[in-house]
Amino acid sequence: MRTIQFREAICEAMSEEMRRDKSIYLMGEEVAEYNGAYKASKGMLDEFGDKRVIDTPISEAGFSGIGVGSTMTGNRPIIEYMTFNFALVGIDQIINNAAKIRQMSGGQFPCPIVFRGPTASAGQLAATHSQAFESWYANCPGLKVIVPSNPFDAKGLLKSAIRDDDPVIFMESEQMYGDKGEVPEDEYILPIGVADIKRTGKDVTIVSFGKIIKEVFKASEVLEKDGIDCEIIDLRTIRPLDNKTIFDSVKKTNRLVILEESWPFGNISTEITYQVQNQLFDYLDAPIEKINTADTPAPFSPVLLKEWLPNSQDVIKSVKKVLYHNS
Image 1 (cartoon, rainbow, N blue to C red):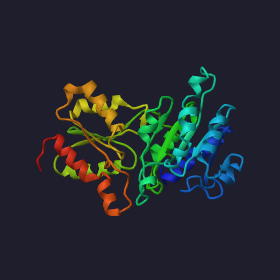
Image 2: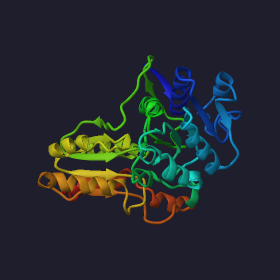
Image 3: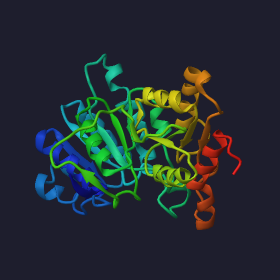
Image 4: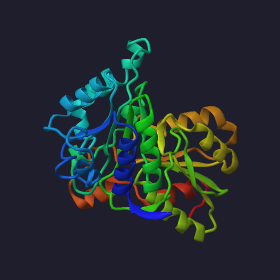
């Protein structure tokens, strides 16, 4: 094993796949000459040239559409957004074209494309640059949605996403690109649609994904001192959702807390809550707790932002609530 940054894991995954398959190319704002807005494509222009690592104008609808169209001629594009907030400009191409080409062509045209870039908040970026759209994309049939939380998962899942014959939404975070973690020396891939149990426990199941899962790890360390043994599940893939891993854990712990950096109405944790209560109602010893952001646009004020975002204290409070602990 070796230790690399999250941005290096992304770069290695793309580079390894581009060496393996000449139909793969990378396109987006500042991916080439600038080595990527977050340096996640560093050195790729030098290795692959400007025909396969392509800088674009600030035109998300345009280069998203070019990417989708190129899949119909045998290419496998990786489309990078500087942030998924900007993908809203190109979301028509994702929802109405990429997600539907296979079905509307009667299976004649698969759409092997990856749309990737950072999601959710990253400090004081205010309302229009701090949004999490995982549930929006996961709601659309035809799309797969992946949100890794560490370099190992990011590299293995991105390689799988690039090899997949369906469109994949691959979401990262500005605040994770410098995170370090161990990855194998040799090539590896991770299966899409399989959650990972980051910590085994017997008292309560905590489900999360993406960078916010760090708050779960912090909370579990505090709770362990109180004799509370948490099982932590990192979803990794949002769609397809690995219900089995969640169900198996809840059958053991009988309690569920979900942490998601998202507005509270109609999100991923809402879906998990429905699935668990529908399938495992008799296993639950307490109502399910879900923890989300405040139901407002993200504030710019650092004081308000701290209140808006969920944190480890919120997790601790919810865990004690489902365990009926008063302290």
